[in-house]
Amino acid sequence: MQPKETHIQAGARLQQDHALRAADLVQNTAKFCSKPPEPEAFQELGDLAQASFKRATAMQASWIRAWGDWAAFSSSIQGADTVPKYFDRLFNIVLQAEAQLATQAQEATELMDNVGVSYAHWLAQKVEDKEN
Amino acid sequence: MLDGQITSLPNFETEGLHSISGLSSGAFMTVQMHIAHSADFIGAGVIAGGPYRAAQSFRAAPTVPMSCILNSLYVAMTPLTQATAPNVDKLVGMARETPRIDALDHLKKQKLYIFSGKSDAVVNPYAVRTTYEFYRALGVPETQIEFVTDIDAGHSIITDNPEDSPLSTNRPPYINFGGFFQSHHVLEHIYGKRKPPAKKALGEMIRFYQADFIGFAQDRACMAEFGYAYIPSKVKKSGKAIGVHIALHGCKQGYAFVDFVNGLEATQAQPPYGDRYITTTGYIEWAEANDLIVLFPQADGGDSNAVQNPDGCWDWWGYSAADLAEPDYYTQDAVQIKAIHSMLEELTNAV
Image (cartoon, rainbow over all chains, first blue to last red; front, side, top):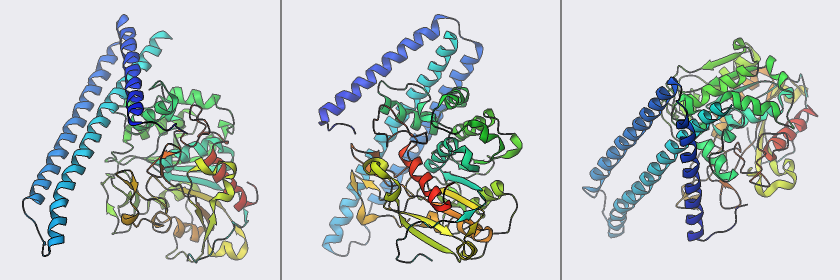
């Protein structure tokens, strides 16, 4: 079981983990660059960059679609035939925007993690190959 | 078919032809259990799942639990390229050194059905390809593996039910309409050409307490209160079956799953998935025609410091370990593997 943490403790722990992961990455990148890499490594790195770009582009396109839908939804109020329903419809507009922002923030950080972990995994394998 | 009774699992005489299949986390779990208990099985079906111990592909973070989570999310499920997917040679090496699993030689005679949808964005084709390569590297002949990659399906088990989601979508409950029952393909591949599926499953669906099989680890097993078993009508009368097939649902598919919204269980908006994976995916109709018992164990969700499993997935990255720094989700001692295997023993009066 994980110990109970305050918001500050959890944030600090995650930042520390991130810093250690980044330090590992720098160290492995230096090891990787210390000897000339095999030609296929450049191809694989290129593929990785291209795949990352493709995911980012797809994510951006889905965000644009989602905000377009929200704009259409929020441009008018439908079915507000009572005062409670009117307030319900108004809050739906705000809540949908909030939910969208939260989802997009999560998607963006997930993609950053995905790219970082993918690169770190690839690099760790290359360094291991060199060391063996 | 399902009455209000909660019963114990009965015993049956079987020919010992047991198998296992699953979707997504159920597929990852299928692989862990299949490798751990390979002596007990004749085959497995892996729908959108990665290879054995893929959550330990490399040291992705300073702490073990976080490393396992990052590996499972970004190496085992959504690698960006084939070169960043799980390293098969490494995982095979780990499997050969893993204690408390059956001898890997048992795998050479087994039949494998492995599926990856072309539009799967949750466990992508790069990840699933490594499952195929993993089994090949362990000596399973190519002729015994049906590796399907040419269907434009999203993350799902495919059915012939028009009310299910469109084929290429990636959304809960991850049951998509594709004009055929994928479970039939899985079972036909493992058991060979047998009788066509029955029009109706006229046997008995048994509801049992899973806690009876979990023992001391109730707090971290993350398994729902009830599990289910389908007993075909002829098996019920004769007490004889060809074997037991274990069908493992994926994340968000257990009967007890409730989504977490803003950190709270959304009990007011509980999706009506219920027993859909059990009753509508075609397993029981095939089983009815061919005297095969189907066991449907059920996982549950949790979103706290005690258990980090908000989507109700099976444990294939270590959340149920007594010590999170020493994950043991892949051996015969793993809480969920042990529980499911005990159910199989109970049904078959010892495997």
